[in-house]
Length: 85
Image 1 (tube, rainbow, N blue to C red):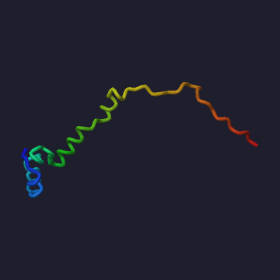
Image 2 (cartoon, rainbow, N blue to C red; image 1 turned 180 degrees about the vertical axis):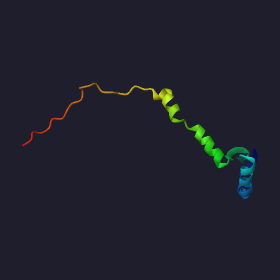
Image 3 (cartoon, rainbow, N blue to C red; image 1 turned 120 degrees about the vertical axis):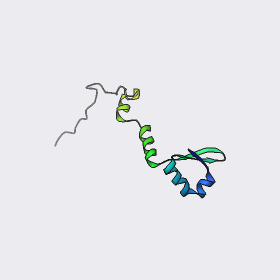
Image 4 (tube, one colour; image 1 turned 45 degrees about the vertical axis):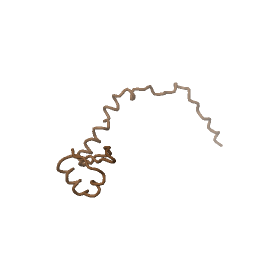
């Protein structure tokens, strides 16, 4: 993984992008500290898909097991309808 100061990445963006596509992720630094990473879109999508839980994981998680508030039978009041004329 190569490191690019933000000024170089901006000035030579085409080269920066080409190296990302051919060599892999490229790190951008600002004032000597790592600030961002440029990655291929297929790699980004793979990382995003791995970060989201699937339906099975959501259903099997402890947060999914909760009691539902179910009212008691017959506790609901019915509206009285006005008489028909």
